Length: 274
Length: 296
Image 1 (cartoon, rainbow over the protein chains, first blue to last red):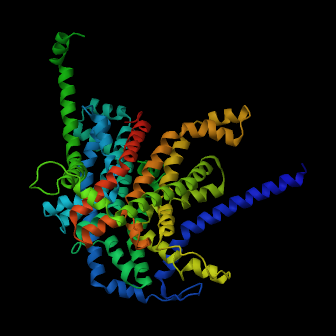
Image 2 (cartoon, chains in turn cyan, brown):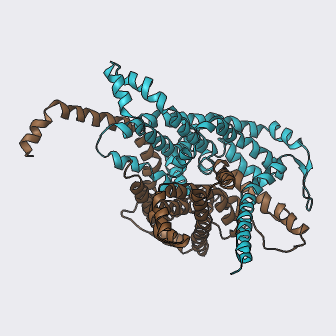
Image 3 (cartoon, rainbow over the protein chains, first blue to last red):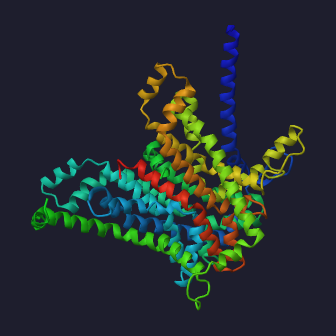
């Protein structure tokens, strides 16, 4: 074999690598960039490569009463669902991590059932139960359906966090005379805080972005922002949906920036590899 | 230990403390467990019982609702369509994510660092937005078709409002999950094992086949099962990006519930979806419990 052969194979491999990278980048970023362009487009006619820029649709979207109502509904329901979930799940996570009780492992695994059912089938089944309990088209129903997706995050991430804390520190505090509650609030909780923040972040995004279940349970009077998107996508001009998409992404982006220092790849994997 | 000594020990203080700890543990776990029962277990059981007893005045179970729905050619084609689209989406996602996870695990440098950020982006994009973004990107007279037009390609198959659109969007949305799960598994494989295989002369393929693949079976099962359930139970993507017929089951059952106002048919379809994905769901739970054996 001549050295040229090696050279061409090396160059070929590099070219294939760069090509694959560019294709993946185009596949992932292409749709999002298109959406961003549409959000600042007045109109975009085929076959122009770029739209005619204008922000007139922003005024249109923000002046729409249904949109502001949906924004209010989203910011009322998702934080409440997250807070309720945290309130009941964090103590349970502490129990899963630290206390011995019968059926501990099976009960912890039972929370995986939220992932083991096809979501839409689950929502349809929940809807029939809600019909009987008069929870359809109520605020309580919307909060409950949003909680479905928060439970797993709020149980499993904090359980892992509490388990990772060395018990020596807690025992030392107890030896120094602190009661169990004081030990929890002054020692355990501060150390566990980053993990708990990540769990709350994931739970909030899951509740805030929930669309399918809320569409079924909340229609017609309890419309959240993601549910509003269905209408905007299906029956409004493209820029309206695009502007609203940017609005809907703001909480995700804000939370990402706020929680950036906690979002080590490990936590990301912990949250999503359940 | 005899029964007598056990009873004697049970009277002692350590046993009482263990009993108190057990009671406290169960009490703390009870509230979220009740929510879980109310929102998942109870709806699933009610759905199964309701669809097997469509007429409350008649005693006993009957599969009437199921035979009735399965007699419909549209429902049958929707079921087949859902299974095929799901399998194709899972296969494409897996084929893309395994090499990517391997690359991120073993490559060093700036490109992998950029990729590691890039592939997680879809995690933070709500599915509704992802579907809409995909439509604007792929639709006839959208960006892709403009680029093709400029390159002189006038005719190509439609990319949205059909199965192609659903698969592309499902792949877009689930790629990060698959890479994260597979990547976490690959991270756990001891680098020394791989170096050892290389040292005794195994090529990259051999190393992959006899070291990496067997050690990554459980994360692979978790990734595949989770992908299947997520795609199979999706509504938003097929609703917005899919065509009119055939439709995926998520859209069919939602239409029965909210458009045709035929609740029992909707729930029957939901139970059919549970049954079709039951084995996959069970494998998922078993795999996660196996992976977490040390931790749980």
